Image 1: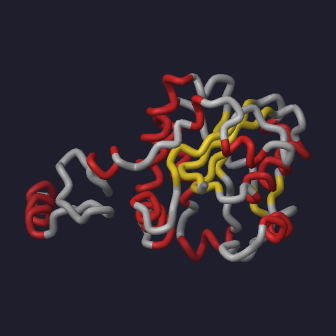
Image 2: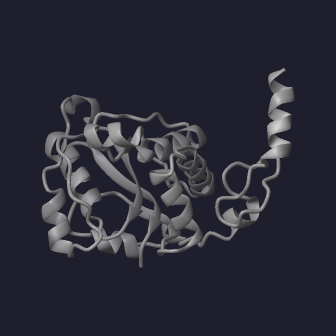
Length: 229
């Protein structure tokens, strides 16, 4: 009965791509294969001291860092991330996380990684949204890479939106917003810190600093879906 009803609904209201509005094939979710294939890959993981690593260099110790797709406002990736964050489609995060992990895995990017740590959201903000999209991204990566997710890092306070802030204002805005209540859980671990988009890197710097201040033996790598340029 449920399959019959689902078939009727699929016929009457076919699922469409969030990017091009075309009808999705039965095996597709949220975006069609063509739109996903044309998302611009950075290839940063193949380059020593790539532009994202240069952005973070000297601000926090890390092993490696990459943003997988180029991010610009109004782009296909922007549409998917906006729908993921603000239009209640957290499954987009899991889909993109899985795609990124599958494409990075052959390069050895995940070598030495023991735990995936999503950048946390303050509990009041998460309560309003209903979920932390970064956790869904981390879950997608986890399923593809076979690495567990840890929620040891917490957001101890909220922060203002950073859209129009300078780099220094962003760093001040995110300073001290994260905490690690149980430091022992990350001691001597290879950590993959995950977020949706790297703009200036201020949030990632603050999150990585909170981990290293409390678990200095941890080794941090950084991965985001998108990176601005």
